[in-house]
Length: 307
Image 1 (cartoon, rainbow, N blue to C red):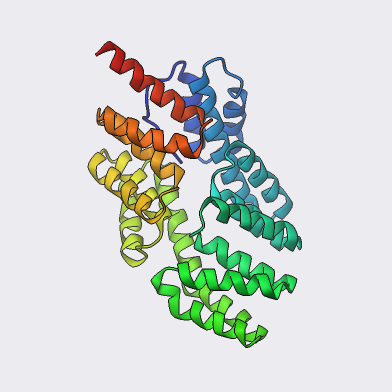
Image 2: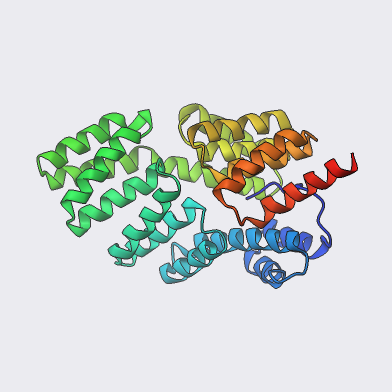
């Protein structure tokens, strides 16, 4: 989910209709509009349509995940086609593939997520569990050691115990510890995160921020939560707070592309164009062909030429 007030794009009307449907939870109808604009002559419209198509597929995948695993995988794959550099999408593909009994595909998806964000805790937990199920003990042990070295402080004791269980080849203990890690926090955080996103979609950023501020206080090492909190602050018109949250997310993960882009866009909204240009150029180094970043940099350049 990206800030909607980025920079002027014309024509705006179809995107606005699609966003209205999206915010009403009518994701399939919104997707039809977004995908109809993927070949629009205006590159900025195409870029937005691509991003919003990705988000709509994600929502449809989430909705299908409890009743139609194959349908969920389809939507997550489509989302990944639109935005292959979003680690959370690959993690979702992996989770659905694992539930479908395709552990090899799942492991590859988790590895793709970790190639984008090596500190992605949930993806690393998922990869460890999948490798354990595949019986790939050497690789599993190596991933456990990485997990222990990079995990949030909340999980450190459990992750160290996991490594010890691996060294003693105690499979049952490893299974128990992985279950404890998931039960301890991941479900709770995920549920609260989804509630906050739902409030954002309904245009209630204050309610979203209240949830996210508590989450961030309890889980300070989760960059995703700080990024979403920045979106909530942005929708509330609190630009300085939004920028601070995006910067905090980037301190935790300097390669967090969404946070970098949204920081650049918020700086643009604040008319701090030199700072925005700096951030967007860093983002462009991560994704040199990203059309939305290129369009924003072009707008900044045009503003400078007319100054």
